[in-house]
Amino acid sequence: MPVHTPGHTDGHCAYHVPGTGVLISGDALVSGHPTSRIEGPQLLPDMFHHERPRAVASLDLLAELEGELLLPGHGPVHRGPVRDAAHRARERAL
Image (cartoon, rainbow, N blue to C red):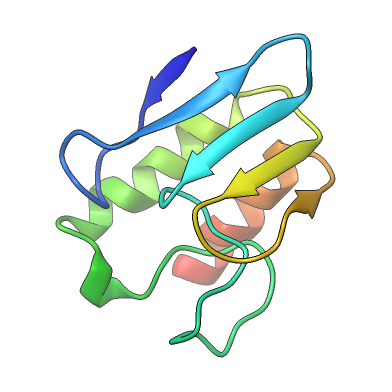
């Protein structure tokens, strides 16, 4: 199921696979990037977003989804509640 997560780009979507515990977050929520000093759940650095405030707001949408396996566009697979990963990334973004 596509989940509209604007901010990185206007039309960015993540994909939630209900019943499997999987969220494919693309660039809306990553777990690392070569230009970042942070490890774990985070947003991409600001230079990669069209609209950072919308990227931050999209984390709230992801936090509402059930799942235990995050497949990000950058960084390693993240295991654990998607909700917690989204909250952690939001904390780091503020």
